[in-house]
Image (cartoon, rainbow, N blue to C red; front, side, top):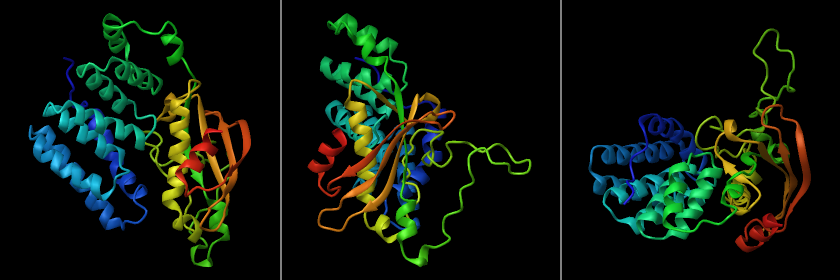
Length: 319
């Protein structure tokens, strides 16, 4: 039975360094203090796992999930706790939940592959091996083990050799400009890419398009969202962005990654207008950008009929 281990220390501390950002960005209804409490409780749960107390760790992490179910790292570590207790099906479900909340979560796909293999679910193990590989994880050993246990599709190598996309920031600045003057001045003016800053370091041409934490594990930020409209629909806007990642990850044409260094493209979503309830229409643009130069490779208008409807959103984004 394959071993399911805790991530190495460098990965562990990379997670912790980003959890504060993630907890706050993923919980629009929470105050900063509540976000900090969520972070501290998740840290406590992870420490329990590291100290060999998975039951206590899982109890802490399950409370975090109840408070903020969209926090992918909480589902991941709940899976690690369950695996330590050899509750394999529960572990698998948590790892899959982590990949649902954060498409391109390669480490979670890798662990889901291992646990599915332990359960004898070779088709699921193969699926997660493909998705983990597309997300930038080296799955050479996993494919070798699967090849010895089952007949792999003849084109499996082609399935993992696909362009990789980082889901960039969701820009709601146009809504901010339409919002109340209460929010005026809360966003700093963006300097054009490559502009002279009197000896300052060169401006990153992608700075305005990249999400918070894009150099690390989880780019989950929404971008400017201070206006009343954006704040009111922040959960729905998050779901729009997550849905784009999910559709790309499920396709046969692209992989989804969680860091710029692994990306062949950055997908950038710009929101120009939101309609009124009950059907909240979203209008804007979707673009593919070069991750190094920021050059626009592809662009088309974005018109989503109702972002509050899961089925409508799925259909629109899929199209």
